[in-house]
Amino acid sequence: VLEFQVDPSGAGVYFRIDRDADEAYQLFAVGFEGTEPPLEVSGPRVAGGSVQPGWALSPSDGRVVFVADALIDEHFQLFSTSVSGARVLLSDRARGSVARFLTTPGAERALYLADGTTPGRVEAYSAAIDGPNHAPRLNPPAAEIGHMALLPDGSRALLRTADSGEIFSVPMDG
Image (cartoon, rainbow, N blue to C red; front, side, top):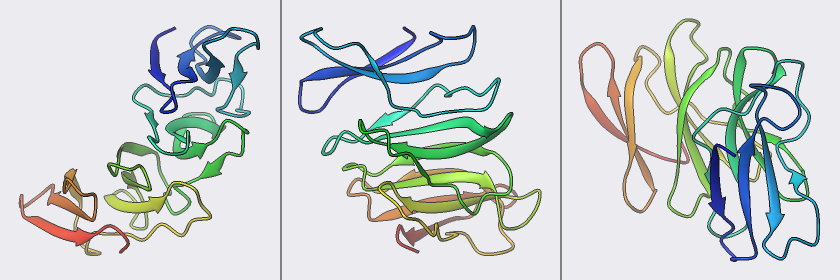
């Protein structure tokens, strides 16, 4: 086990492990009572696909937000899943890989950076973690984003452009 987080309800733990193949990581959930085997929650993935480090667990409903190359090897996309295994693709507008993400304090939305609408340019998007999604692009069309942050209440994203260093604030819902 490389990473783990306690379920918000206190009933169990989520963890990332390369159980089935070396360096092919998956997410699992298991109850503390130990009467049931671990349940894979990250869903199916292509050969060589793997859940990346740095996943997030929703404090309210047990959803997990993670980056994985589950659909196309080496094309990293943002997903959300529940213990029931209902996986949702969050980075539906990203043409390239997701570079990183943050979740709002209640984990209702994910802010992520990806090679998106403009080929070769890192852009910022916001997606509801329970889907279905149309993730709005948050940055102006000509801006490449170099850094992101969230206001403490999660209502707005702060984005810094990669070239000029300009910082601007945008609502998380676009």
